[in-house]
Amino acid sequence: MLYGIAAAATALLLTALLAAALRTPALRLRLVERRRQREVPLSGGVALVLVTGGVAGVQQWGADGSGIGGLLAAGGAVALLGLADDVWRLRRRVLAMGTAVAAACAVPYGETGVGPGLLAVVWAVGVTLAFRGLDHADGLAGTAGVVTAFGVAACAAVDVLDGVAGLMSVLAAALTGVLLHSWHPARVALGSCGAMPAGFVIALGLVHVRAGFGLGESAGVLFALTALASADAVLVLLARRLDGRPVVRGGPDHLGHRLRRFGLTVPGVTLLLGFAALSAVVVGVLAHAERVGGQALWWVAGGALVLVLALFRVPVHTGRRSVSPQVRGPLRVRNG
Image (tube, rainbow, N blue to C red):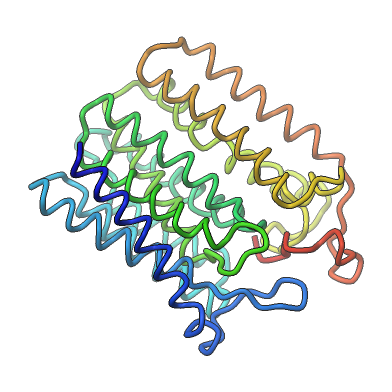
């Protein structure tokens, strides 16, 4: 236990320091994302990947056979794909296909079976892209990642899966280190290089934890632990499809953008959605530990549905010129 605490503390400190140290190189290399009239370096994602991979790799070696090597390798591949997206703005289908290949190599088919394993690949792709979509507001993807990763760590600890629990603790601590800089007004951002591997590792970590459980109940637990990202993705896809707009074209129509229409500040949006994510994660952890029944998971699904339907009718502008700077602010428009 002390070893795990030391690893998490190391990850937090190193990520915070490295994200700050890489700001200037990222600016010089034009690895930036533009918000308002300033450019925010995407050094947070690079720092997150390097520190999480390094600390978790050492932790795996020290724990001797924690069984996360394949997951780390696949997450690293997704991080490279995300970095390419930050530099060249890849098409959505390229991101989906690359993530699917990585997920297919990391799913434990021996425990899940082929059919459920393939479903897990599809779900992992969805969660990965959904976390990328959450990176539309200062600190939102990081907050959701911290809450969810700790939830997965708790589920893994219940089943004594030390490798997964350790990895998730390190990931949560590293995301916290980035969050120290990405909170509004952000000085660094995660970008696809950080948000995508975070979502990917969380999704596959959950698959490892729920492998061998019933498919129906597992689906409820998986949804509860990723309810915020799932709700945001469903809202965006539904709104764009019904409005006749291309699904892959970015716009200010995510959860955060719509909540800003009610006058909430950027930190207010992040805190509100973070609390919603925490509530759903707690229910998911309790359901995994069999402390609450399956009906509690239906309450999470119902709450997510109410949130989506309530914000669906909030008017948004998809044109860049039609969005005022006061509304757009740091809730940036991107291909998400």
